[in-house]
Image (cartoon, rainbow, N blue to C red):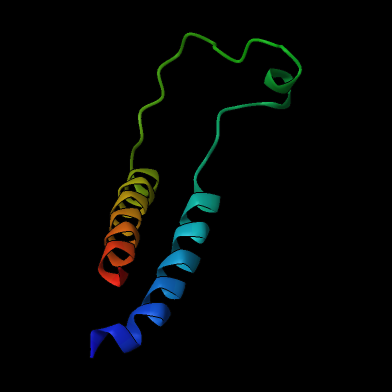
Length: 72
């Protein structure tokens, strides 16, 4: 029964995963693409909504991979 819904679950998880990845903040600047040093020596700590998005991304990624293994 779950195998009939599995493709739809995977599509929904994939869309959510892409959205969460796009919402995450990146400290890399355009200068690092051209050989510049983007390592400012400062440590970045995730707090508040950024931490929630980060952990939710990990959970959704794990669910997506698990659903891929169930599909086999």
